[in-house]
Length: 113
Length: 114
Image (cartoon, each protein chain N blue to C red):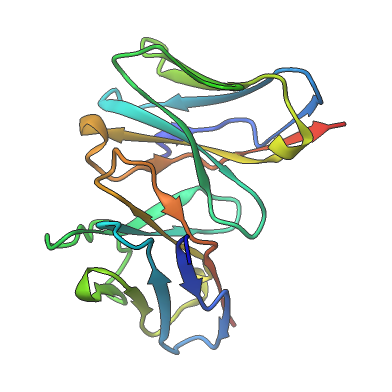
């Protein structure tokens, strides 16, 4: 049973436009969420996180939005750049991040120049 | 080096053999994690070491899997009597604290069981 779902396996966006990556979760106890980016043959790298006490967190071109009532979060990248092309993983945890992360299957983003 | 180092980067072995995968975390990081990523799947938590505490082994899929962390630094993940379903990329990560701290990942070991 997938507790963290990334329903879009892939997404293509033109350079300069906004990329929106979505993530849904089923466990209402999740209260800490993270996004990781992964290039081929490399390990994931941490991008941005958000606690459930917030509904938005911004870091440069990256913004994560959390809608607790819908059990939905999204990662916005604007403007998108070709170097953003990677697989993006959503992850969630309970107990304010003190339990193992549960990862989604990832969304492959392709930014087209 | 500055990052998490894993070896070997690739391992091909026959079904039934034992394998050992190594992880060198970032110096000073107290927390170390092992994950498995099967083809087309997300990262699957295996085991977590934090300082001198007993490891959280709740993610290990069977008793064929075990891990050690010697001296609070290097970790070895051992898979005994490998099966074809063990084929995956095994990722190690470290962090300066618990699960709430961003994890720094190595590039993984791609394990193929023939």
